[in-house]
Length: 319
Length: 115
Image 1 (cartoon, rainbow over the protein chains, first blue to last red):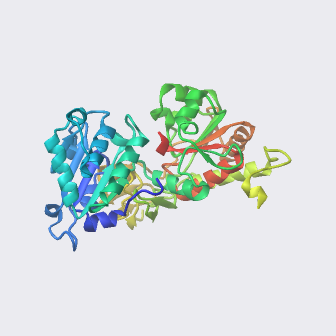
Image 2 (image 1 turned 120 degrees about the horizontal axis):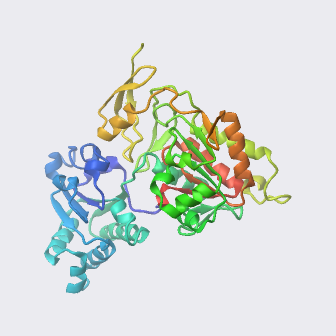
Image 3 (image 1 turned 60 degrees about the horizontal axis):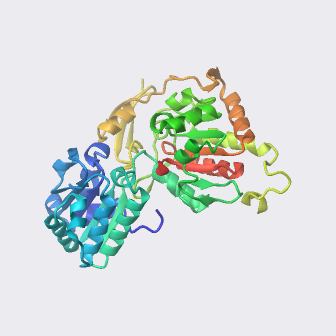
């Protein structure tokens, strides 16, 4: 997600008067998002708090978040990309056909109102969730929305931010970007990082059976992935590091219990707007931390002869 | 038993990573997570310091951490195309170690983002 037009949640809290949640249900998945950052807070620029802000929810069905919204736009399932494309045409006054509007499941009046409000906003934000990024079109949907946010800057200030789930998944993106130049879906098999989601992304790798050993940390693919992927995990030696014995642990060859991060293991976690925050663990754990276990496995590996033989091409060996 | 109060604790349940939680904890468990939402409360209160699971399992049998680390390293070393995956519910420090390990192994490296 490098290069996206974005901001921090502090800016949203202080300045954003037009907030769009697209394909997400913050009321249930990020319960404090409204009160801490997007809707309820008062600021120098938005002295009346909620009354100074407009919230639009775009989703395929009515969720609990609808109650918190001013406007609810019910897009036809799988038509997010089409809707964003129509909006991109409309903000630039390009012609669109009735059929194109009808396809989105919304009326032209709704869209005209939405565009007028976007342009009238002082500071607009798109928060997009998995309803956009994990449905038909996938990363192309996210790319389209990021483009719309970028193009809106011809008229007013507009930004976009993904609503990240699972604790430190943002940190994983940031760390991989820092170390390899790419956020996910990486292969080191030529000795340097290559990026190709679809080829190197885990579900695809597992479904094709392209790996012969899996090291799983802080995740439970045994509970979330499609069956063919899980079947392959059970077939190859799988190693799991987790504070619990998970579904994946049960089909793994090696499981190591580790201290839960933030509860009894210290460290750093990234918020969804890429702000790093220190963890303050409250308990002592009888188990080692993830960091310690991974470091020890790595050190054990470093003692073994290089797998590339006489001419190791790894960067660390060339320096 | 001593009751500790930890101010500005950080919750890592969801992507909000709220850092204004006040935790009341003793040696065993967290009793209160003030300001946390329903999800955060469940996250803090459901983890305890007790030894609920074996230190490690190898092929379903209990083992020591040292044995499990040696076994894990051997599996990874023997593999032609190992995969390092996940890294969501862990710290940046552990993620950094994972990247270095994947680099050394010539492995595939991926997170939840691709799911």
